[in-house]
Image (tube, rainbow, N blue to C red):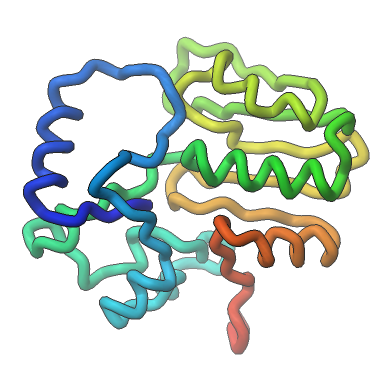
Length: 197
């Protein structure tokens, strides 16, 4: 998620986006005049929780739905480039892939499922390849990073939820610690402390 320095810049970007047909490429840093906005920072500014609480536990991931006080027309909503549905941005994907490679090794056989849920024309498929070659998937699915990724030994799973703008990662504590310590990636542990539902 990114935030524009000014509302004018955000309006200019939206106007440009409206004039474009779907240009290929994974969602990425919008460039000059924009900065990365973390879920935790937005929660501090708004007083809303990072994770939406009024839904079933399996749906509790960071999401724009958690920020009920941020509404279209309030100025803040318009300056934010919210995450695209069902995909990580390019920079987050590359950071996560680097951590996975450090943990499992770049030659690890890995499966990736793009999960284009909304396109009945697309035949479902799963890609198989080296963990070190994950970035090549952008050439095959130019709009979304894989929704699901896992190694042949099934020691971890990456799951990007289509509806909730969040990614869940399951795996051994060592891997989760490596992800949490990454300087670029933002993490939230689920379930949250004190969550009994």
